[in-house]
Length: 449
Image 1 (cartoon, rainbow, N blue to C red):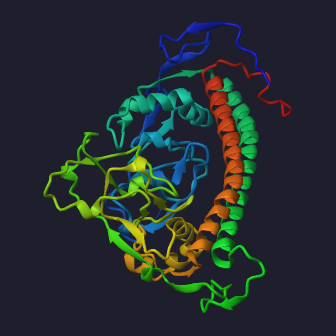
Image 2: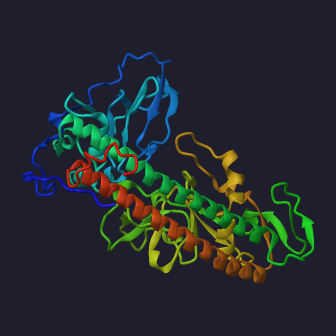
Image 3: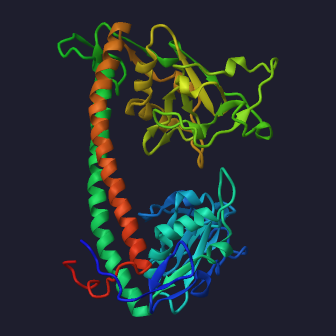
């Protein structure tokens, strides 16, 4: 659907904001709001219960995804900013995460991290309109552009509120917010459908892998009891045993951060942040300068090595285990990451499928240590009981799994592309409405719009 434009525009005086409707006002955000007004009293009783919101609990589309209930005495030192109904929180650290959320009818005593700027609208700014302004693409791009730092880009709240915004009269702000509430809800519903599809495809993928690596490819093969309750029956000619008998685990070296370099001529360090789900990521890379007698040769990774993130091993996408390729080399293994070298009885790709399965997740999660950062140990890896078919069958299973999961991955990629397009549409619609590039005054209350 196309939307009309306003009859008259004027230059905003800001290159990236462009023209705005002639009757709109253009001013820095700080003149229509305050920021970081309310801080938790240091004399708060230790047994006072708070609902804490950290940056990882917020995203720009879904807002606040979760809150952690805790006593003030157990709260991190960054749990200090109070919020109230009508506020909007914007992340000022790791700004590329775009952690932005409206605060609407909050739980009692909600406290957010000092990594947020708490923006509180004044009387000439409608809270819901403010929420859309600070989540608009142009505003977020300015926040990121004004941030400093490489690994953890950050912006001062005082700098954030200097960003210019375009403000229509109050009734128009209300109309625009109502229009965007309705239109973004439609888009969000479509996104939710695609996300449900992706979850179903993910479950199907896991089922394909789990069945292949535990039951094999021959439906008529004689079976035997594995002796492991969650594993059940396996083909009679397969072995069953602890992982540790068939692989070697090497924990990474404790490289000191003071020696990190950013010289791509040095050797990459594989840190936990670089280990994703079935892939290695080098978007945040540090290096180490080698010398001929540094004793680090045993920490040099090779193509085909498996690596696993020992801290927070399970994330939303799955288990953080991946295979090193030629493109990743040369690189050195850093502490809190482990490499797994299988014996000749195990195909590395077959082991990767086992470690990526929900069976491995079910094995280590009940015994994962650590509260804020869950951790898995080499002993837990070695105690994982696995089914082991002959090498020829392992190769056939990997070929089958690769073929079947490729089909599912194609469908997943298509669903993700649909989500990306919908979110682009959502972002463009918000930016257009809050900068006056479209006129929604006469359609804001039309449910058929």
